[in-house]
Length: 433
Picture (cartoon, one colour):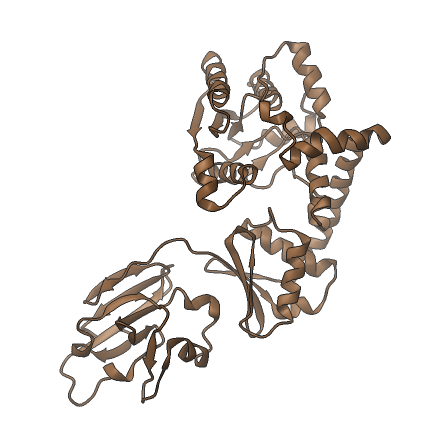
């Protein structure tokens, strides 16, 4: 059952969503909430069919939905094609299923359908998570394991062991289903659960409880360190660390990096070796970059290290004309009337040009003369490498007539022969002009 402090914590919420798969642990969680219905907040069930086990996947979802119907519980059902999701995003099955679940849970909380998604993670899951983090090269943050409440997921069973859950299920005669893949050891967590942890427990029977206590101690240590973290910034979806941070390698510096990753939701799948790569990057020349998990690329700039996630949206070319155009990260305004903070060009010379992202082979004639590759021009202007791929240009073929919002080409400059002036303004698509 739930202890008094956990119950008190749960009561502060108005509505919760319970992640229920049909397995022993999640059904135990659901039964507890049904038993304590009068004492707990309103709740509904979230069931995700990953469609990875054929008829067995459908069986599990049907079981959960029937239980909810019998007990007058709302059930939100998600029918997911995880195999396709993994192929499209380059994920392994275990990783892709986990990431997709988190996307769904995050959406539930973000839309206000529930204040938290409650999961059935228990003490043994905590021990497995800590061991996985240790084996993958974790710092203090990884030793903390899972928290009771991370702002999205709420885990009220962390102090209850798997054996206690199983005993209570049998004692009450509560039904549950067995996921056949739980016994397979081709997944890393299952291998730890079925092979490694039992061997450890043969020597140290209290290993699970002791690892759980270690996680609690690590959490207290991390809370202390958090008071001394080095500042980082998040700007337009980029994570920015001062370069000076990498001049030191102590527990505060490393904790600061992990705190930034947590802020971005990138912490999962980042290991100590990736932190080592960031330190290596800090010693390279300006403009150097490395690829990291989550489709994240890290760049070294003059006085900072910037981590930016890959932008997936395709920016299609648009024929030049007067109007307002949304193009990826940018909003472009083209007008025949003056605007503040804009570029000015000869309107007639821009006829037939298109708005598009830069591409290989682009060349640019600087204002005042002198043609060079667009890449060299951007280097001269000290435009960070991470920002170049999203820049919008006005061009005819490979002849760039304007780099927005930086400069126009000499070829479209206003002269004493200009009869119509074009005003061009570009700003990030975040409302800041």
